[in-house]
Amino acid sequence: MSTHNIIRTAVRLTHLIDELPAIPSQDWVNRCTSALSIVSDRVAAISLVGTLTSNLDRLTVYSSGVELAPWAENRDESTRISISLQDRSERLNKLDLRFPDHTLERGVVAPLQALSPNWKDTPIGRMLNSTQLTDPVLQLVPIVKQEQSLCLLNILAFTNRMSAPPKDTVIPMLSATHPLLRQRAQSALWHVNNPRAWLTDREHGVLNLLIEGHSVRVIAEKLGRSSHTIHDHVKNLHKKINASSRGELIAKALGHTPDVSSAPAPEPITLGVSDGVNIAELKPQQTTARPLRS
Image 1 (cartoon, rainbow, N blue to C red):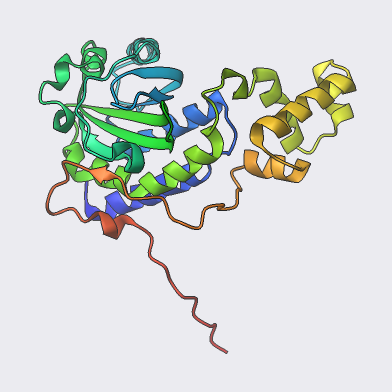
Image 2 (image 1 turned 90 degrees about the horizontal axis):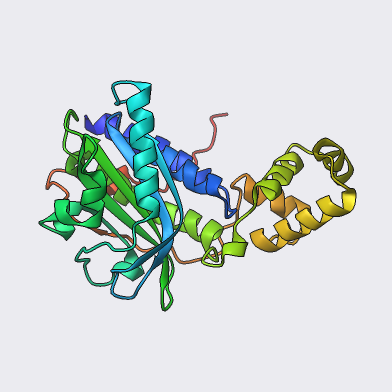
């Protein structure tokens, strides 16, 4: 992939990440994997939200998503691989990887081989063993650091028909967009270690109807529920999304959230990048608007 195409894909990836809503739902995880899957037409993207122990060994998964780019030979094969990866990723409880210092503060983007020379014998390697996928890249995005740190864990693996190795294309894109993804994940998922913090299917349905501009009365009629029940759902939505008004609720659901942090997210620890790849050039530069000619 040429530098031009890398930058074009990075811009598109940035746009998709910036559109992630500030709501704690399974749809967020699915949209995250869908965004990551654009980095290559030979990729399978897996996203896990869960807590890691302080030694970054034990993992508790709360939610997961899988997205395959169109590389599988047929739909049955694609479905089989997706179901297998979804099932096995939800049961991951150990990583057996050696992470760099300060990973829980900064995050990391690295080939799995850089974190374990025997990566095929790790739980993630065994998860990928029954697929046609190889060259896995791991991205760990810290969300909340505590006794058991809440994290977003992205795993990207590729077919051996990829035109260029991931270290030359994917790792620079993931590293360049990492701070933005961290901000979006923190906005949406900061308290999902409490199972009750996730939006239910019914709450998500009510939220979608609110976004369409329907009143509580109309939503009640559409869903065959009482207005009192819909009011309760809206009340729960305000609490789970941390919104003080109907406008803020809808804005967060659409991904329009103010940047509450004045300090930018730290750059991740990046391993395995080729010397010729400049991650900085993939980042948008600050520009000053020029006056229009009179």
